Image (cartoon, rainbow, N blue to C red; front, side, top):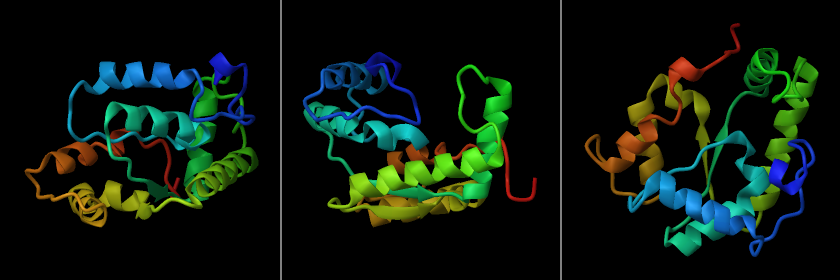
Length: 171
């Protein structure tokens, strides 16, 4: 977003032919090489979805969409924690109200992007509580043949690392 001279709460209008698609394409090659199955995950991905979709398609990947749902309160608490750790980078979300509004903004952007595209819902909590089961369920929903030994399970098992979780509803 900084390359576009925009901020996180004010994303730029981006299109599929944006020059940033070339950068995203190069990054996919650096990060994933020739892996046949990859997953991208970031709450802010919805702000740059057209760029990533274009780069993924150019790279030859089929693109499936998953909307992961997490409690707005947990997201807001997590954002407050991130803000306290690095207020220069995380300039939004210093209090719970801002955090919930940021969650709502991302959900709005994600739903707007997905309005004419097929997608599946997944519960964030299921990836924390039972990551293997959640990965298998998601693989099934996406039509990816899966078992505990299948690459999809190992790829998606790192989706919600409990060690990275900054807050829960009980905090």
